[in-house]
Length: 398
Image 1 (cartoon, rainbow, N blue to C red):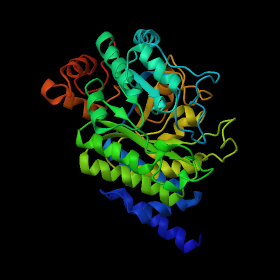
Image 2 (cartoon, rainbow, N blue to C red):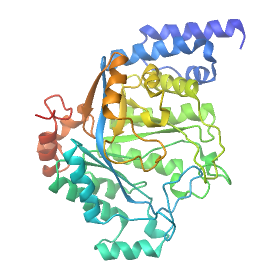
Image 3 (spheres, one colour):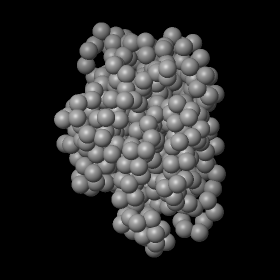
Image 4 (tube, one colour):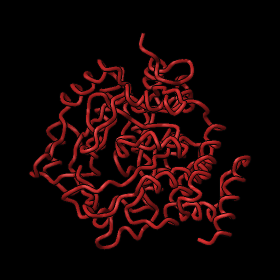
């Protein structure tokens, strides 16, 4: 990059200090392509934008991670969570196993039951159909719905399901038993469906299908979590386009409560075991660009995937750590343990922020459920009112 180009780009970033709107696609792409020489200026701009949005507070959700089933019909090139029936570690949790984890989480002050599961395994595996029949359910989504309702009725935790692709009907059904739900967009790049790419042989990772689910959730005013996966083979332009697609859906419907910017981590035994991981500087640039593209949206980055330097992610303009569990591992990234909550608080405060515990639904979205008429169900309204304080955060323990 020439000296003149560096100066022009640096000046462009500095001009963002007083800007109230989002940056353009072209500017965002330039920022991602820029070198370390303007990184400090870029980060300062992102921090100023965050300060206008939510000054002084960084949030997290205290959760239990419930891997309802790790059977999955998708074969993503980076995943060690999924299993075929009969493989070591293949498991579908029973209702008793689910509630055992939930009750243990209750005792530790958790407020979120995060359900993660493979995408429609019964369509590929007769063994899953047999298991569901034994439990008394017709499909994996039907079983998920039953477990979310059980958690809601029999505990103080609030379910947050991440079940993969869903129809509009299933979004509606799950919204009656969970105050929020999620589906990672990951990328808008259809190139990654090609042979030997990250989403080869992963029929549920077609970007258009995932965007449709996020839009259907918006039409139904369901608080929704989504995000991108950084470093799985997308170009920098495609990374920006994925963030813009999320932003545009939120602009239309106002329902995206959280945007996760998650860094790819290579895992042994996968086709992408030797794929390069995004480094600290690339993550910081991506986070800053996400903040500048989405000045008034909640942006999260998982701390365990950037340990031991995760506190640096705050410099990129995030305002949330996502779900952190004092009990269960990150079953998607089991080699990356969560930070202890005391350490998370200390590192967050060292950066000048107050750490606040939120519910799986963000405070500004939780308020829409506090009146039964505005909620998707009376039961949800009652449970959320009991869990939330006057500001919509998790009620502090007495």
